[in-house]
Length: 110
Image 1 (cartoon, rainbow, N blue to C red):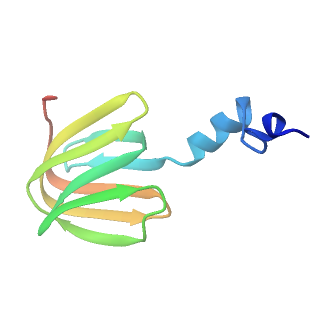
Image 2: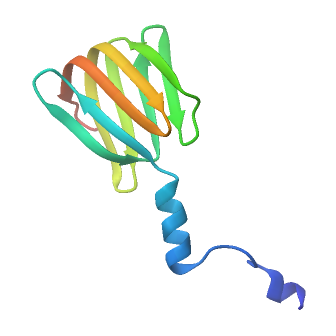
């Protein structure tokens, strides 16, 4: 095997690459008392915690956080979604993120 043959050796291709990229997504739910605002896969989240912003990526440690008021940014494969949230909790467990807020409304993209 030459050096050129070994370039990319072991790297997933085709269906395998797609399966692995799908596996490294967070499952996200954004829920208020009146409606489920979002449910889907995300690559990252930035949330307004009560004491500052919190970034969440795949593999994040389990946690429960008190939400503050502000913008929740959800980055997906197709772009991003933004919501204005106020008062509630955010839970991260096994790459699943649940945002439970008293107020949730879509926020316009900048």
